[in-house]
View 1 (tube, helix red, strand yellow):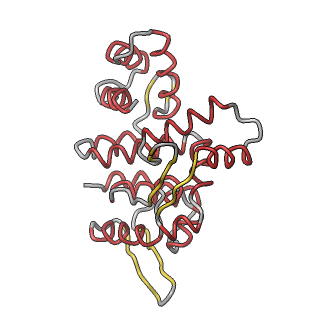
View 2 (tube, helix red, strand yellow; view 1 turned 45 degrees about the horizontal axis):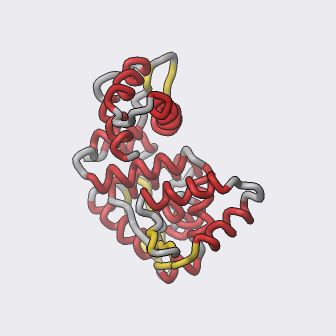
Length: 240
């Protein structure tokens, strides 16, 4: 899936005509079945593109993708972030896993049965095929590691570019100007999507601050992340 996603996103820098992009993707993707390619197109178009009257909008996501294209880790973080915020079931599944006890210890190991139980409690009649698909996406994205019959998950902080992208995305959604790191963890998307705990987040924010995209201040046991840019768009435009 990553290969096809990269192909689609690279092609958006060549055309903003959705019909031309559709044809180019179908031609360039490696699958043999045309119907599978069409299904993939529908899935990706919804998650990665914003379309108005047959034209693809140059969104902050596409602009950021082009800016960080030569950094594989950052690109994968950004694509996974976008996938999660446009696929509620993925974000909610990760939120079920990102418990305080996990974030504090930094690692958890659990069985497939445990994950199924979590999903069943949240979605009473979720089909097995949907559960399998959610697990498969999380394994392919590297969020869950599969070893024999168990899954493991460890805390992770995305690259600075994507820490900033997620921070400003959450800020525009929640109206933040100077949130604490506890607020960023508890109310934002960085902790569940990336399994990022407070210690890792602070390290990421300090790196972001050295690049001039936020300020981080500690006051005794509390702290504050002072946002520099007014919006996600402004952050993306300022990223170097």
